Length: 236
Ligand SMILES: [Zn+2]
Image 1 (spheres, protein in one colour):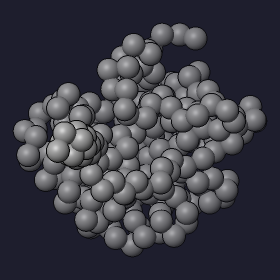
Image 2 (tube, helix red, strand yellow):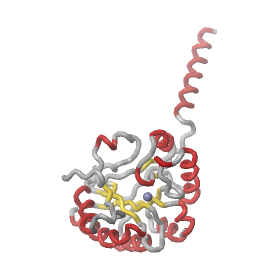
Image 3 (tube, rainbow, N blue to C red):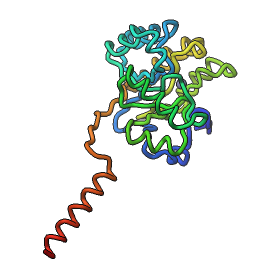
Image 4 (cartoon, rainbow, N blue to C red):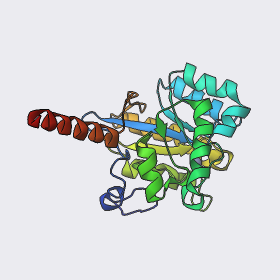
C-alpha cells in the first residue's frame, strides 16, 4: 500500500486522539460511507438517490447553517434511514477558534441536528477541545479521505484513493459540497460498484446514546465521600 498521509493517516497519528473513532470494527467486510458539509440542493439529493438505488445507508455530517436553510433535505436524509452527525453550525475550524465560540457553534448545530456524533471540520481539534467534546460526543474521524474537494487531483485519483485504502471497517469520507461535486459525481458511483464487486457491505455509523447521570469526577467524589463515611461510622 502506498503511503499517502493526505488520504490515510498512519496508526501513530490516530493514537493522538484515542477516544475518537477512526475505523469501525473489522469483523465483517463492511465499509462506512460518510458525507460532510451538506445538505445542499445541488448535491445532496443526487447522493441520496444514488444511495437509494444501491440500497446503502450512510452517515451525513451536516453543517448547521445548511440544515437551517434546507430542512427538507435534512429530513429526507433521516427519512431514508441514514445516520447524521454534527459538523458545527458555521463549519468552524477548531484550531483557529477559541474554545467557547467553538462549543457554542456546536451546540447551535446540535439543536437542529440532534446527534451524538461529531466530526470536526478540517479534521483537527485542539487537545482541550478534543477532551471536552469526547465527554459529550462520539468524535468520528476517518480511515480514508477521498480528497474529492481537491481541485489539484483528477477524478480518477479520487476513486483510486478510496480503492487503494478501503478495508474492513473503513470510514470513508466524501463531501456533498459544490466544491467536490464534479469529482463526486464521477468517483462515488464507481467506488460503490468496485467495493461491492470486492464483496464489501455498506453500513452507517451509530452509537447508542449513553445517558450518564454523573461525569466520572463526580462519581469519584461521591465514592470517596461514602468511604469516608463508612470509616467514620466504624470509628464511632
Ligand atoms: Zn467539512
